[in-house]
Amino acid sequence: MDGARIMNGKMNNTKACNGAKAPQEAEACQDVKVYEKELSFSKISMYVLKAGDDYNVTILGGDKPHIGSSVLAVPRLSLTGDGSVSATSSVMNMIGHKDEQICRYVAETICARKNAVVLCSGGFHVDDISKDEIGEVLEAVRELAEMV
Image 1 (cartoon, helix red, strand yellow):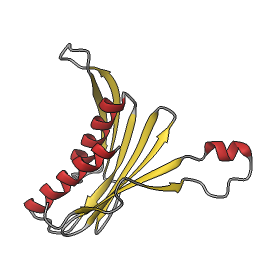
Image 2 (tube, rainbow, N blue to C red):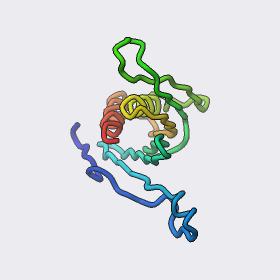
Image 3 (cartoon, one colour):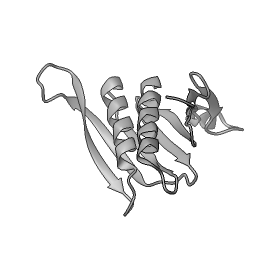
Image 4 (cartoon, one colour):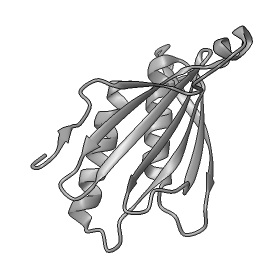
């Protein structure tokens, strides 16, 4: 994509909880991996928290990051009968938001690849976004999901 590049190569590590005092608190703290993609008109970020064997993912971007959709993907055997892993998803959307497409893609892709439960929430908003810019966002989301 013209004008787009991976901002942070593979990932940045930040602590989900800094300054844990007790050993139990330190054990509860997990690394949050941050993946970012610079677009020609904005930026999209994906925050990934590993929760045991599962994943909690937040996608934010555009001029007005928000929670527009949440998708919970649960692994299951594929209906193709070939023994591969697929996903069944449950979706919650805010009225009028179109973020399901990006959250569903990320949740189902990571779920099937990692054979893990994945919750993906988030939102990307740019006023008067063009069809080409929407395509750029979708391509960026595909690239980010492949990095996990």
